[in-house]
Length: 309
Ligand SMILES: [Zn+2]
Image (cartoon, rainbow, N blue to C red; front, side, top):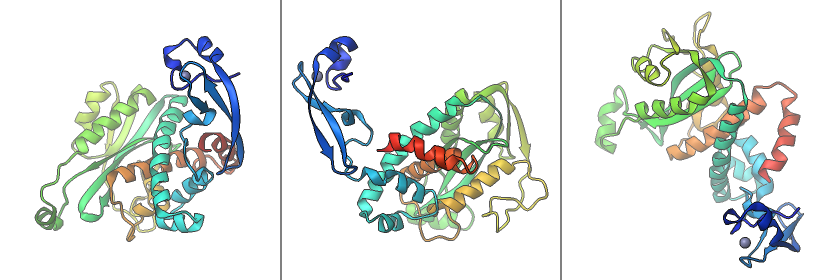
């Protein structure tokens, strides 16, 4: 059946729109050697194809999308990915934005398909933007036991300790947007979590108030923080039983798998928006590939071919 015209069909009923469309040759797409059917709309006289409405429309290197996604979630930097795939750095930088955008939608949609979550663990993970004088906070929420990433938000705050004075002198005052970040995170979590869910976190004094506003019927359990262990990327704790293990293990995995979050790396985030993109790409890969055992590789391959190219 012919598709409806993307340029004028929203103004017509769908059956009308389809009769107005006729086939009009085809073209061979160079990037994946596929033949794509072209159509012509008799009403607005415009040509289009099924690719016109595809998210990868006008991409010349679409065959690299999935490989790049895997590299970015396996501790490879943007520049090294460009080298390995024989792409330019600009192409990789553009693809990061594209993959981030579709990953955010994928994360939301795939989480909505799951049953509503009963026990949630959440906390802030720290990183920085270009320099430690400009710290960033990643507020992360994870389902207990399964370690499924439910949502995350990136926010900024002022440098702490001996860097406070240096940061103020060099970069001026810096806004603290962590409260706004938590608000946005809780808004996105609402449809994914049961009303009477249990939230586990550390003893951050701001958590109980914010949680009460968004989830009035939820129970909140705060645990005392513990020292990080070196082998656990500073995220796994030096205690025998960690009540926030699912969250801390996920944080450790993000540190081991995203180059910009490594400890003592010279690869940093230059723009918080790109960290947001990269984190979204990782979150989808984490939920669908890393968290699901050995058979997930096959499922991943079959689900990707349609959505990315
Ligand atoms: Zn039309």
